[in-house]
Length: 118
Image (cartoon, rainbow, N blue to C red):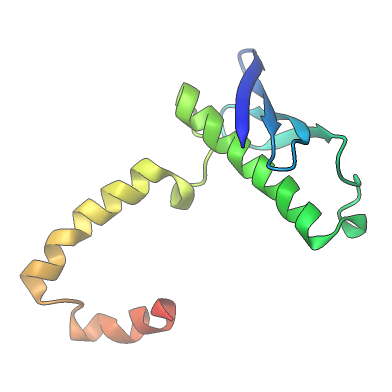
């Protein structure tokens, strides 16, 4: 995928994303929260119900990549916290010493963690 920022004002930012099928997507979002309010492309049906599974995946990936690109290039909080690479790294660094100190996951937390590790 390729992306570039094509416009920006005080509240919003626009991107052009070219997906792996060489379909160009123009995606506009709010800089404050990453909410996408406009998405135009000519390679897939506009109605998600009319798209193939692969077509839906390409559209969704383009939207996610646009949010990531704006975050990476401009630093705006366009990503959800759980998808933000800096926050993921910070969380990993914060819990890494716990494994060494506690010998792994404390016994009282294992039932809560076990369902998520499958």
